[in-house]
Image 1 (tube, one colour):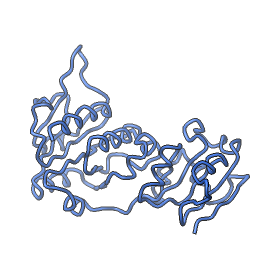
Image 2 (tube, rainbow, N blue to C red):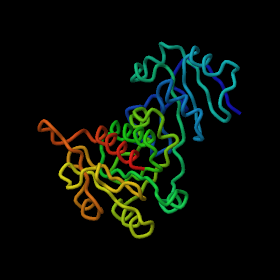
Image 3 (cartoon, one colour):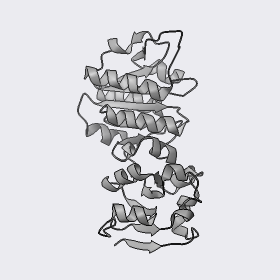
Image 4 (cartoon, helix red, strand yellow):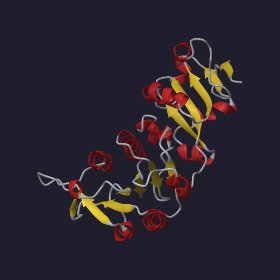
Length: 267
């Protein structure tokens, strides 16, 4: 059963995740994430993920739950706008937030076995800006990627800003976290006939000329240095986006949209 409680203070222990938005890594250690804003919260509510709690103004509660039918097994806290304005980032969370449970760890093997032979994967190698990760997750959802693999050197797609920039796409996108990305990619190559494609501004193959119809895993790298040398050395192909006007590269999130669109067009 859910519980509905009006609050006049943020001192309740259950409300602490909302008061610590600038410490998202602590949230991950607790196995939770924060969703901010109407669209993201709505998408969380319609997903299969566990909703731990919600915090919102009376107006938002009336709009989301006109029959007072709140999510089962969730705590719902209702507070006046002035109180919620004291939480960092009011312009972004708009007076409506939720805490969700990070999904249980999934293995790479189980994930691949559930996908078609010509699977469409993306791997993240050393991305450190959660905003970029969130946009890439959203692009992956838009262009039909089957799953995302994150190495230990990349930030989590469940960090607050990642969740927000994905616009909730992370709630339905399978995410596989691995300790060693190179080992994971090699196991895809040898065990599942997956073509590993490293994105590289200095690559020799135009993305439009690559064979993208088989099982593939496209790797996007660090915002400054790109895909690591270790990953590039094991990749089957290094692809680039042709540039004009002396522009040498795009922001990784922007580049991902171009590359994933081209892959989807081929497929």
